[in-house]
Image 1: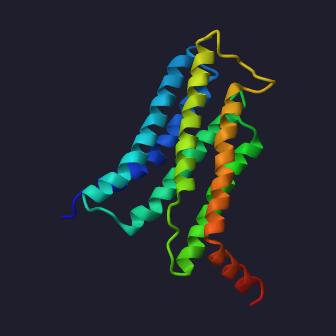
Image 2: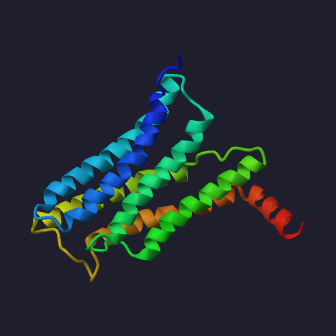
Image 3: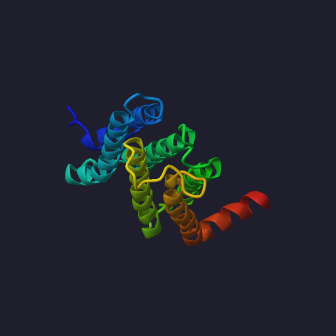
Length: 205
């Protein structure tokens, strides 16, 4: 009997927790006690980040590293993080605009295509510092927005509801947006040889 693959379970948990986060976060803007709903959403976001931090460590420590896990991990990261950003966009306060959500979404789509292109050429898309920095900055930005929303719901006097006509969370998320753009450039530039070969082979075959 094969041992239970805890690493895969942790990775899958992000996909399952993400819609729960979305429900509580979006619902908080219409609830009689928004702070309670936001605390639950914050707890769900914390579980997502904890899962992301632990699954790789668990896989290595229990000798459960697998090809399936390597494919599932970036997909779970993308689905969970994009669910959080989508929730920021569609909530009643419309914290981030459509263009910013699409920027986050398209970045993950480009990396997915690039990962496939590298695999086609027999190489692995290696993790880069820009990608790791992006993940950290996006996580910090997401939690900053969540706590801003919590502060606003609790009517904390020094947290404004609007800054220059925008939710304060919008200005916070500009930093992750900029780092996201830089990470796309870094990945494409470092794998330009593969991109160029694929482009030439398809356009001039």
